[in-house]
Image (cartoon, rainbow, N blue to C red; front, side, top):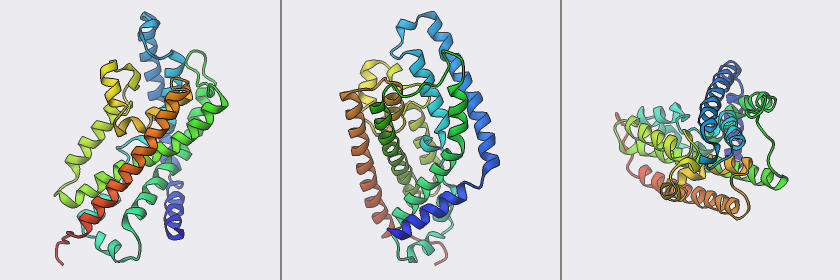
Length: 267
């Protein structure tokens, strides 16, 4: 376990060095979040009762999404892992006395977490002082805050485990680009990245909430805003726990299969 914690610390420390990129990201994400709020506000002015979430909940959802973009966006994958597989450097990794899946998993989590740590606080602080109704609100209750923290951790596990499956498929393909683009598009649409899942028709939403994508950012952000509470919040956290375990197990099994059939060009 100590060696994987070391990989986590090294990658986390490395990610904290990119402060200029973080500053550019903060400005970009704050502007994008403001645009999203204004678009939703225009629709809400027409008929607020026609929407499944209060606008204040939607505003909090948007600002959380921007603040923790690095945690949950599937397109923030590590090119180093793809390159390692494609150019054959994975052979060196396999010679180490470590579990390569666990090492990549720790590195991916640390990379996402370091980017989020640099960007989240400025966005949340500024959003907290915006005028109504665009202001970022506090959790609806202490219990919601605790559930939100637990759900955020589980959501990070689900996203990382899902991305690990995308990395591992590179062992079986000539190029990872097709699988990567398909996976990213699926997450963007089905995880609530473009619009929150409650805005989908009920028949579609019920299906989407059973998929692993809903266990990413959808659950923690809706718990924070109060859109998920009580039994629904508990069910959401349990679904995250299930999908985290299922995706990690699937990744380990697929990695074991890939390791038995790796062919390195030139050797």
